[in-house]
Every structure is written in structure tokens, then in C-alpha cells.
Length: 249
Image (cartoon, rainbow, N blue to C red; front, side, top):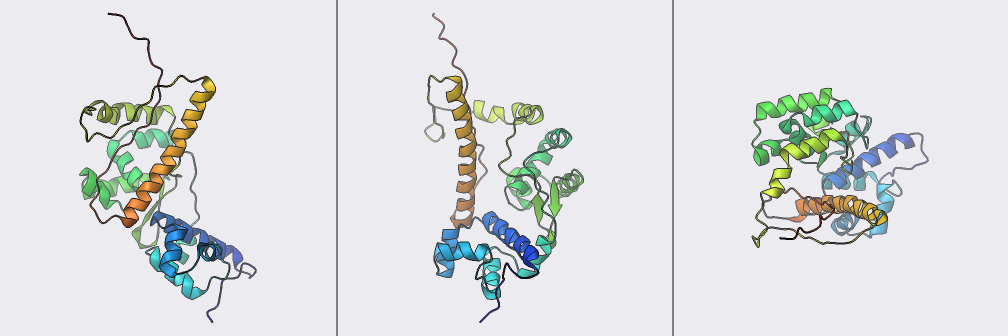
């Protein structure tokens, strides 16, 4: 029988950090507990126990590492690096990040779990500029370099971009994408509703938009894991605004 990781041993703290890193790597690979259960031919309850160190053998841990596209050695090295992720940025970080469209593009690629090579393949940023932007992001304490050359963003992907620098950045570099769309084209994806809402209803819409962002990230992870078709980057906007009275002609 393979030895197991016991939460009661003297190294329980190290094991918990290792398991937290494993869970993060599996999420980045777009793997759900149901996916893991199917691949390892066990129940989801068993997967849940394993991912929290209960009854997890070293052999099974190695299998989970392989599914997360890592090794036990890399996992141990990565777990030794403190996770300094946050759900907020300093104003100085946000201003620096939004000062350059290329810099912010490289950062968003990292935060979504893609390799930085996507910056060249999807957005035409040169390899030399990518390296400069990665170095800048590290100096801004926005990303960490991990074993094997991987990069980890320090910002939670669910971060709500509501402050002035990112709003100005969207105004200058993103808004035109949506205004230039041909909404009469059957291939244009959009949905619209006109509703009468109280301030409480408006607040609920704002909350639903943030929940929708999380659902979009989940769709992207699942699509990345399961789709055999080539993909392209899409910008998705969810917005609500008051409707002005119609002017009589």
C-alpha cells in the first residue's frame, strides 16, 4: 500500500500548501472534480477527499499532478513560493498596468492561465516586447515566476475593475469594439432587455453581472480543456444604463 498524506503529521502545513497549489493547477487546467472522477474512475466524493489530503496516496498524488500537467517536484517547488495573490491592486499598480495596452494584454493573458506566447499568437506582440512586459509586471509585483518558467498573476481573476484607471483604459481601447459591431449581422452575438428598475433592482443587476463574469471564466476553462477546435479571443461586455425619453419628431 502506498503511503498517504496525513493531516495529523508534523508536516501537515507543508502538505496543505502543496494541496492548495495542486487544486489551483487543476483549476487552471480547466479540470473539475467530475472530470477528475471520470479520469481516475472514482466518485466525486473520493476526489474531494483526496484534494484535501484525506486518504491520498503518493501514487494518486502523482496521477493528479500528471493531469494538472506538472510533476510532484514542480508542485513542491511551487508550493514553497508564498501565494501573494490579492483581490485588489494599489492605485499605482493599476495606473501602471493601464498605461500600456500591450502590458495590460500580457497581464490579462497570464491571469487567465494562458502561456505568454498567446500574446504573440493572439495579439501580435513581439517576443522581445513580451519579455520586457513580463519583467515590468514582475517589478510591479503583479506576477510571480514559478519553477519551469511559468508565471502566476498575483491578482484574483474575479477582481472587479471599477476604479478610474481601468475605466479610462476601457474607454480608450475597448469601447470602440462594441460600437463598431454590426448589430444587424446574424453572426453578431448580443442580447438586450429594457426593464424598469428601482435602485435595489439596479444593484441586483450589478451583482448578477459579476456572477456572469465568473460563469464566463468557467465556460472558458471548460472550452480550453475539452474543445478540439481552434479558438480566438472574444471581448464580452455586460452593461446597464438608463434609457433617455424618446424625443418627438
